[in-house]
Structures are given as C-alpha cells and as structure tokens.
Image 1 (cartoon, rainbow, N blue to C red):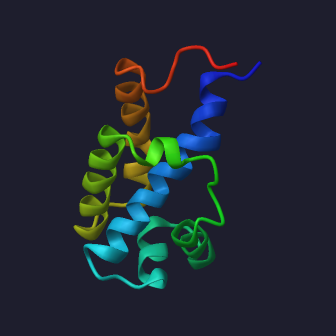
Image 2: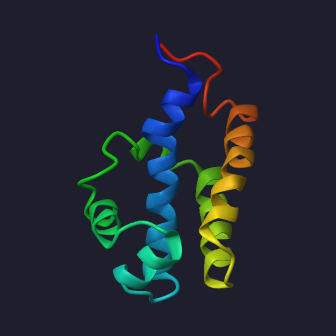
Image 3: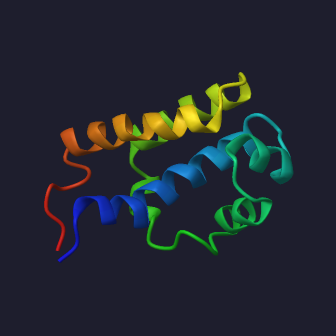
Length: 109
C-alpha cells in the first residue's frame, strides 16, 4: 500500500521540478547552472531532468495541464526573485489542486 504523499514525492514533485527547470532553460534562457541556483538544487539534477535520466515515471504528470501552468508560475516567480523555499511551501497548494481535480487519486495502490 502506498499513500498519496508517497505518490506525490515519487512522481508528482519530480515532474513539477522538471517542468520548472525546462521553463527556466527554454523560456528564460538560463543555463543549467543558473537554473539550479534559482531552484536550490544541483546542476546535475537539472541535467537529469532535461535528459529524463531522473524522474522516470513522471511523464503522466508532466502532461497534466494544471501542473504545467503551476510550474510556469513557479518559474516566473523564481526569475522574479522569490526564494525556492517560498515556492516549495506553495507546492502543497499545487498538490491540493491536483487532488481536487482528481489528477492525484485519494487512494493509491
């Protein structure tokens, strides 16, 4: 038995981070090093997300429009100087939105 939070940590959060990283690289022209500093993660993790070496199994969440939009907002906030900690705290709200839309089921087996 897996809890919803386990599903989120294993798949949803990596998908969210991957989408944010891609936004920073593609839409804001940042380097992987710059994006990693903004996000508070290592450059290697950014590389893994971009090459899909990390976060396998997250593709079903990367295609969720709601998550994509929230990642766009988070990327913009990072570029505008908000701290990664503030955005990380707000991830709980993103998770609630996804649960309300039944993107993340209340029971995971």
